[in-house]
Amino acid sequence: LKELKDVTNKFESIFINQILKQARNSKLAKGIFDSDAEKTFNSMIDQKYSEILSEKTNLGISEALYKQFKSHIDSGSRK
Image (cartoon, rainbow, N blue to C red; front, top):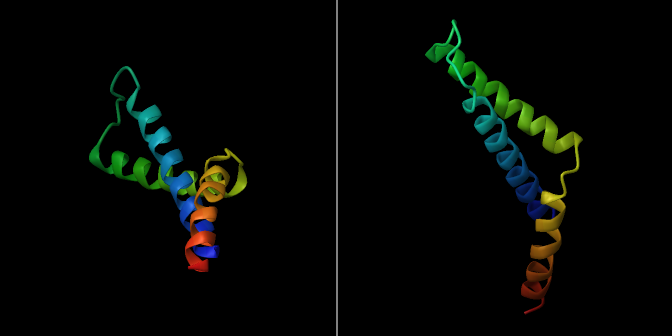
């Protein structure tokens, strides 16, 4: 069950990362300093932010997935 918890936490992190990426892409105009290096940096920092946010905040996504799939794992291990 620890593996399931790790996977659901990782999924929540990926979900948050997508939200951050979409928020960053929704800007209306290009900045003066837009470059590939800045895009790479922003991508890396968004990934780190998403990992931290998924650890420190409770959006409930990980918990809901864990509860849903836990019963499948429990019933599968009894067979």
